Length: 276
Picture (tube, rainbow, N blue to C red):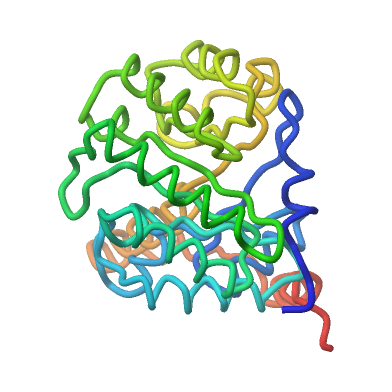
């Protein structure tokens, strides 16, 4: 590829001044988010899986995820980061290959978690760290910049407590991860603890109980990046569920008050990548 989105994406990661990584699930949502002011787009493994009629957690193949990522890269001029779950395999060499393929797909970066998919348990500490080291080596060997994010998902998934998540995130940062991430820890204070414990940027997830916190609160905690995960996709699912329940249950169409087509068309055009 002739364009390197990595430097611009890396420059967005400012501890204490977080940007919002807008997780999209198709070209249209990516272009609308770009038109609304997003500075970078993220894929969402759950949101993508839902578009394929599948549940979250290990149901999408690497080839499918890469093709989807390429589609989002082509949709807007913004840098795109891939949510690549566990890297599509337990072995460190598989994770390293996923990093190389992600860069070839035009991504500015990607995240890899320590979940031992298809189960919700976590890889043991030594293997989790070995996988991160392999990803870091692969990312540094690329011919262009690439932001690698290492995730400790066991707190969210119930595989281990926050103290273990912190131990892993600190080790991941020391191994060279560009950014670390513990989704849905017990509290914002725990995110503050993580930010103080590492020398690299920290990602926080605005989902579940954490939607009550503002960008200013995340900034005060030292966060550099706020991602949405599947939260925005789930807002659309809620709208479908509520409107569908009313329609098919009581014949009530009153919830079908959507956004007019004209403004949507304008946003799609505004957020699209310019024609070469």
